[in-house]
Length: 105
Image (cartoon, rainbow, N blue to C red; front, side):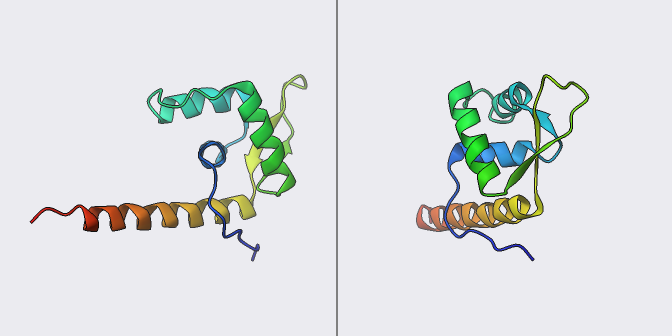
């Protein structure tokens, strides 16, 4: 079982990991993030590639073979999936806490 990081993910890292359930190259990741956030997040190349490098160093993603050798594709690892699942649980708890706090009688 992979060791799971206990610190929160950045929003960029969260959406990148969410996007990489199937292999994608950089531009496709940016487009997917824009789509799933309904345009709220339009990630720039600098943010994306900085985050991809950090996630790769942490072994949350890996570069995979691509049909087009001019493109680099990435996919989430088992450790990355565990980290993402833990982050989703943390976010769900935060939402539940907020809903309880703001519950109207």
